[in-house]
Length: 573
Image (cartoon, rainbow, N blue to C red; front, side, top):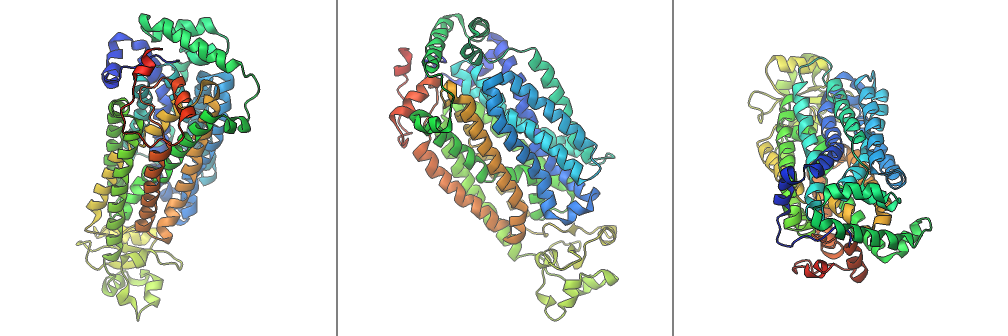
């Protein structure tokens, strides 16, 4: 079948590295298309830091949690549309065209954001960027998958995931670099236009996906590209398998409908697995960490914007490291086992975060009436009104005061000792800072803050090599060629819809029920994800793309994942 035959004991990671001198052309295709992943990751990471400074520039954003969530989530709403339209563009015009259009939209959005004079214009720019990211989220891994030899297909698609996390890490570095520069967040958001422009230039010089060309009847063009991708001994076999695959598909020339997708057994079961993985990838909470990482660090008790960014850089670095590990493990361990190991670690990490944030809430520093009165007329009105019961007030109660104006907590030099509950405005914040005291409005001082950082780090370490990569790899190889663009678009749309729900609700959830219960919800969803992967997700490690279709036709429940797959059945092809 299409794609050639991998050796079961071959290290795909070593094969992938050997391409640098054996066949650099394949790496050129993969890296050029993978810039789409870099842009995807950069946008995910950069907004988390930029949001801290956008709040400082636009007071309406600082006062309204829903506006902060809107700035983050409108890009995701754009990505939903981009992913949905991208599936059609992928099939109609090709993977290459889809990537170029995505870059153009991303470039326009970056320029608009950098020049924004208010939240409304900023949100318009975020929509454009989202459209580009949504289209690229499926087009880039699809292009890489179809332009890769089978034995390193998983590793090269994992390269796209590595570039996503690399883009996130780069965004935190750039955020730190511009914290002292005039315009701060404008530079952070605007600099993304450069890699988008670079990818447009690179993609114009690269060919279309050979598998897409072959299906469109451009066989000679496809053969020229496949000769550059495959070794001589594999080339004839690959052409024959590709020809058989396309001929089989062209027997059915009717327009693809949703009913047809549902009625086709292999496609339906593939959608269960691919869409389910896409759903759980988001609902275990990863993008709350990536979009709001500095905010989570502040909730853990680290007040400074710069400190929050610096500590978030650690989690982003671990994310990039995890993606490097996935390039090795995705084809050695297998997609299914890697996802299960990943989710088990995610559950344990979320349990640690739940307990830690609960302890932070319970042991929040008390409010001192004496310290509060030192700020003359700027004592928090709600605290002052509750004079008879204010001995029960702590930092958490102070920053969650519901009456206007809002309140902040000015810690004493020993941060966990009783501090002042005062009005949250620029004057009081400056007065607190002049005494070299820390100012808190999002979280409270805590002795447990470092444990929360450990929990975040463990979460990223477990998530990134497995659930950060597996859904993209599975969705790039589990569908028959004829349905791959449409089904990939459906799965990518689910990713963004799920992403939108999670990112739009996270800050509100932390305000209503607190961070501890929010992380517990993600933990329960992660347990459900483990059960789903065990039952519904097939192991596609080393299986030629079209053989996956046969496997889905024969088996619906995929529980026996621990048995070693007999690859000899594929060798005879």
